[in-house]
Length: 126
Length: 140
Image 1 (cartoon, rainbow over the protein chains, first blue to last red):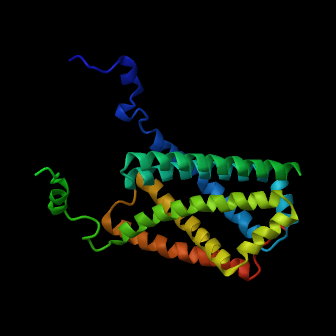
Image 2 (cartoon, helix red, strand yellow):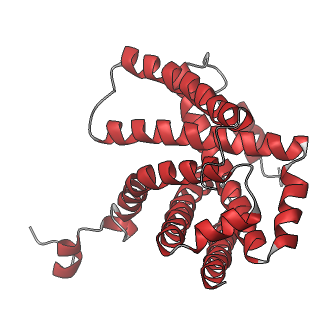
Image 3 (tube, helix red, strand yellow):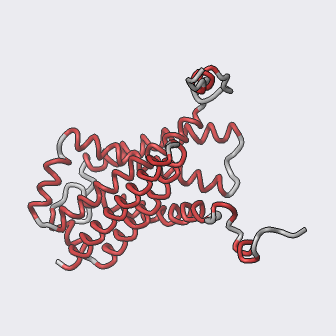
């Protein structure tokens, strides 16, 4: 039987959503990465609790800690966006509100990411 | 008959039993809690970003952060975020186990739900207890 699908469409295997299992897979990959990163983050927050600004500055200025904090923030924010997207898709049924909330959450998350990465770089450069 | 009769028809249409009809099984509670803590942790990321900005702007910024975080409401928010992180972490691992095909039998899922709920509260309390008993701050 002749199919209406183009050979490219067939080989891509993305189905009608055009994104296939990408969303699901990215959510899992970020969650696996966040297991060790969250444990590290908890260790850091406990270790900095009750200390001074100087301690926090010196700790975060270390290249490895700056990198890990940047990675924790980036993976968290991407994971958060993927999660928020599902929540919005599930509960908001009006197209206008849905598109607004999706764009608002995406832009807010990018803004939070840019601000925190800048702060991390600034701390490391101090 | 110019009025559209759609609304009354839609209202009187019989619906199949839905969320509001069932007694809440514990698995339903852990599922919605995963979402709620996830959304909560997104706001936690904003708090973390603000903390980083405060550190990067020097002593004044640090004091501004602590002026807010050292209040009862600030501590309550930090405790909520801590619990959310512990819960989302534990239940997230369960989600990954589900993806691999483990933990689906009804009794196992119910037992794990209770364990995760209890463990998340114990974990969050333990973290705060460690700080209050002076076991935090070891990075100094």
